[in-house]
Length: 68
Image (tube, rainbow, N blue to C red; front, side, top):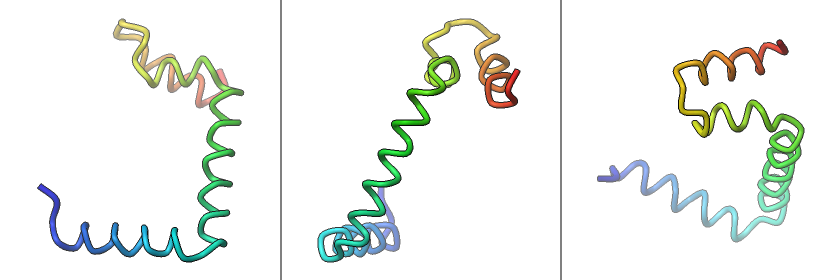
């Protein structure tokens, strides 16, 4: 169940998103950046998504983050 402060903050964030073109541009920029990073690091994305059903998926994800 969502608490009142969370509902209030989410309503405020939604109102700012609808009202301000700068907030919409910032959200779009973050979404595009996340898509670019995900495309560049497919192995890390798959390991974090849990598509690899072994105990080593977390270790592979951490290794990909560390650059190994």
